[in-house]
Every structure is written in C-alpha cells, then in structure tokens.
Image (cartoon, rainbow, N blue to C red):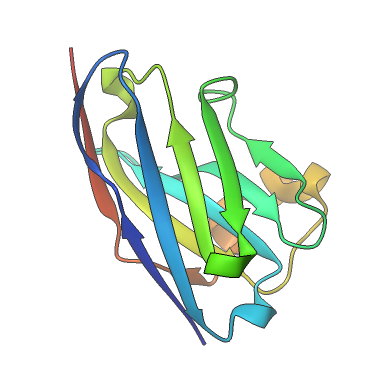
Length: 130
C-alpha cells in the first residue's frame, strides 16, 4: 500500500504561484508513476502532470504546459507541483496519485489517466481569484 498526503494548497490571486507537496509513505517502491490531478466544482477529475519514477520523464496536460512543473525528491519521498501564472480556471481540489503499473507516456492520454492510477491522496484545495 502507498499512502499519499498533499499540502500547500491555498488561495492566491491570478498570476500568482503555489507549490504543492505530496508526502509519500508505505510501499513507495511499487510506485512507478506519480501524478497530480485536479477537480474543479461541477467538473470531472483531470490529470494535470505525471512523472515516471524510473526515468523522470514528465507528461503534462495541455492546459498547464509551460506553467506547471512536476518534480520529486526521492530522498524526502516527496512529490511536488510548482504552479505559476495561475488563473481562476486552475481552481479546484488537487490530488496526488501513484500507479504501480506505468504505461508508456505516449499511451497515457489514450488509456485515460484516471484508469492508470490506483493510489490517491485526500486532496488539497487551490483557489485562484481574479
């Protein structure tokens, strides 16, 4: 089992930045793919960014490319999401997630991000005001 706990959410004005953290504990060795998702009010959860643990290859949703950066610190067992140039459309609950089986990055969109990840945190709220 893998336990995930997010932190770093909050309220920020448009154009601002936030850095989310996800503390990973438990059987961390089984996580081959780590990611961040978000769910806006009234919308489905969507994948935002992912990183392959073995290669550090990263994948981003088109809506956040160039603004968000996913990274990890294995020594601290922590996953990060640096979010810059935030807009009100970035508002939502952000979830950290982990997957044991990692498909090729080229297939992640085709398979659907939600179907790949099996471990989830409880989420942290991000609110961006205009």
